Structures are given as structure tokens and as C-alpha cells.
Length: 394
Image (cartoon, rainbow, N blue to C red):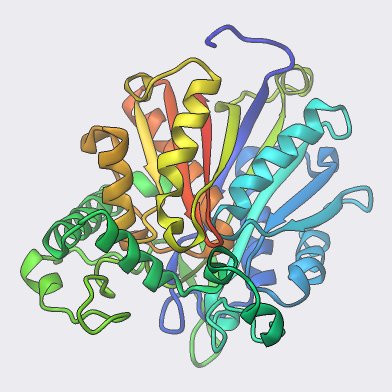
């Protein structure tokens, strides 16, 4: 695997905006097209990649009207990409921008494209409420005649968290302790300047329409304690264990990963920071969607002849503490290797942007630790898990 080839899919840049709280956070005034525009401009500026080389921009987005296609195209064209640069959008729920990496890599391997950007964006401030990610126009007689597995694709995510906790005996105490660690690790990474290597600062607006620069995640709570989190009430079931404190935050943000082959990178004088080795998607019961990584990760590692002990860092999206704990324990992972810089419970989870966000955090972490192999993974609504394998070259 460490042997380099001209046809390797390499990463030239993996950056993200700050992730901020929806409605009240620093990026809340901005619309999805503004967030996408700024992460694209910032990525091109920082990486020095010639925008005229980009053949395609594939944007992961979950909640936007009309699939986000027109808003995404608006952002790409305003960012200065040439007419030849095509735009597409993808929705694999929480893995959307991760799947954009997989599809972009495939298009490059096939020869259809030479350079591509796998991006992601979500303004949950503007697009999450009031439907909360559940379609409002399902034909009820059709739904009523469907089986349980089909009906469960519409289950609110908080209820799936409760189902995982109940079925696999993940207690409230363990979830709150896990959440505290997420905040403390993310706080250390933010305050030390570690996250600055993966963040594109964003120009946002104030209530008085003045410009302000947002350069840090604003959902991280440095003063988190078990006592504080354990005092919060369950939000999905009266006798439940899932709270606002041990769940991922509703957030705004964007991400972008620039991909090409090693051969093209060398031809144009660009130094890869990583290699995208491959990915895997696994299906799980829709009502227990949070267990997705526990199936996708083994499938990925088996494909490449690896075990979890070969992996230096796992970036596991923390949709909920319940499913994160289950997946880590089921896979026998070392907690020290999982989300060493905190996860979505602290940083936030802007759905369409999350795949690219965890990639940027993974590659930044591998660089900082001078380690080689990393895996990203996340569960997705409707009953799936995604996992991707990356090799550090930075």
C-alpha cells in the first residue's frame, strides 16, 4: 500500500470553514452559497491550485431546496472557475461530502476528469427548520402499507440514538463522559492553534450588517463537566438517555477537498498532502442507523487487507454519543486513536459538509502526529455507514 503509483488518487488540499452553531453562531447570517463560495476561494488561494484545471465540483448537501444544484453552481461560478468546470450535487445524508470524494476519485480514475473538487455545505440555520430533515410530502397510504424497515427510514435521528442505546445497553453515564471528552479535546485543539491549519477563515455579517471574520468553531464548550452534562434532560424520550449535551450540534459550515492523480500533480508541480486509498458503504437496519460505522469500517479494512490495529487515527463522526460508543466498543478500537481532537458533539455536524470536515481534521491530525494511516467513518440516516481510508504524505 505504501508503494506509490502514477495513478494514485491524491489530495492536494483538504480544508473547511469554521463550524458554528445554527441560528446563534458566527456563520448563521450566511446562506449555503456564501459558505460554499468562501471555502472554494479559500482552498484555491491556500493550495495555489490553478482553478482553470478543475474539471468538476461535486457538492455534498442534504437539506437545500432543489438539491442545492443552482445555489452550488452560483457559488462555483462566482468563485471564478471557468465555464468548462461542471457542477453536480450529491445527497448521501451525513456522508454526502465523503461520498463526493469517492465519486470524484472514480471519475478521475476513469479518465473522465483530471482534477476535481469534492465539496460539502450545509446551512442548518436556513434549511433545517421546520421540517428537521424529514420529508413532509410522503403519500400516507403508501407509507402505511410499507414494512417496518421501510417506515424506519423516516425515524427522527434522536429516536434512532435511543434505540441503539437501549438495544446495546449504552448507559447515560458513559454517553455524558464521552461528550465531555469531545469538548475538552476539541477545546485543546482549538486553543492551541491546531485547527487553524485546516480552517479557512470566513467573512460573515453582524446583526447590523457589518463584516466580521469568523476563524474558530464556536460550539466547543471548554468548561464542560460531567456534572453539567448529566444535569440535562433527555430530549427525545421522557425516560431516554439522549440529550442536547451528548448529541452532535446543529451547525453551519462548508468543506472542500481537491483531488487528482499523482501523475497530474507532478506534471503541474503540486505536492500531494495525502492519498485517498478507497472507501466502503455498508447497509444496516434503518432504525439503528447509528451502528453504520461498525459495519462499514470492517468492510473497508478487509478490502485492503488491514486490521484496526494498522490504523493510526480514526475520525468517527459523533452523531450521538450512544452510537459512537457502540461502534468503538464493537470494533475494539483504542479510544486514544478515535477523534483525538474532539468530534461533532463539540465541533458540530453541518450535514452535507461533515465528510469533508472529518477528512480535513484527519489529515491535519496525521500531519501533526507524523502518522501514516487514517480512517474516516460516519453513520447516515436511512440505515447506512460510510468509511474511507487515507494515507498521509505531508
